[in-house]
Length: 410
Ligand SMILES: Cc1ncc(COP(=O)(O)O)c(C=O)c1O
Figure 1 (tube, rainbow, N blue to C red):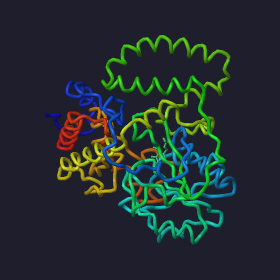
Figure 2: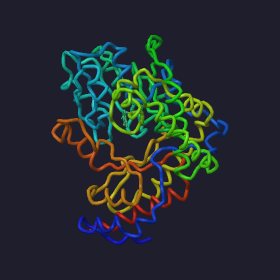
Figure 3: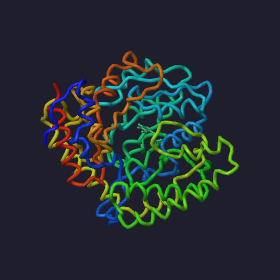
Figure 4: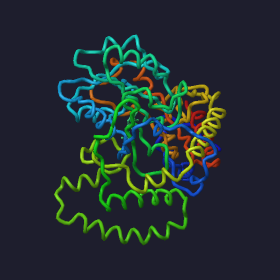
């Protein structure tokens, strides 16, 4: 494989080249296929095992529920790591609280010693993130919060599976939130869980039939788009025809606000739509979640991570962010620390590698002066998918492409 070498001048030419046009289509997220419905071979601990569970539309609505449930709103502040994405901030602002960003260590862990400097008299809660599925030991942070009567919210958006010190992930927080759609082949879905509080009074309901259909069809459509479930493809052509008719009927006489709700039901952007707070995960997503094998997903994620780790550990221009895979980790992605992020981001994207750069978009006012480490991580860490739906060929192609692009840096 030879991508040639490139710099900023020939970047555009590279993106237009025949080499790039031959790219396969690789998904950033798990895709529905028949092999996910195997038998459980072993127990893979998941956030859902924590205790009280409320299934939500996504993780950001789960966070809004947690804050409201803890009576956090106007006049309060909530601390969250400076290495963040706007989806973590919008629910805080929506409940009326003020976000305070605290710095983290270069291994993404919380530095308890710096936290007191950021706590104010109105601070009510601290959010801690298990980045990329690598689980942080929460014991000292739990103690820290208990001593100061602060609410601890574990953000498990990157860590649906795993355990620490014999406890399932999400058990240490007063609340934990997760983004189930990042781990299972479903269109939307998140959860709020708690090992410490009753969530009974939180009211969440299923959306109407239209939203249920939309979610189910989107999951199938994505599977077909990536070449899984070929037979469903025929059915989907018929669906398109029915769908367009249904949608035009649904939109008739709706106010712009109601139409917005419909448009914003994708889980992938950072917008926060308050209309989605009352919505549960859809029937089809729940059905997939209940019938699929978690152990299959867990094992495949670990196996794919190890393939990436072996292939991309000693290469020019990049290093893995974490150089081993602890037994209790079921990674969301393979995070790589790039030496020249600005030179390789676009070429890798052009090739079709579905890289995510967590922290690429930041809340206004958060920059290198807030936390130099977070600033560096948000520029240099690229997340390569390692989910269960990747085929060996897709993995090989991503590895070859990454090495080829890194070798081409001038
Ligand atoms: C750390 C973290 N927390 C929360 C969220 C929000 O998740 P969701 O998209 O399910 O609302 C994200 C989204 O990417 C995230 O990365």
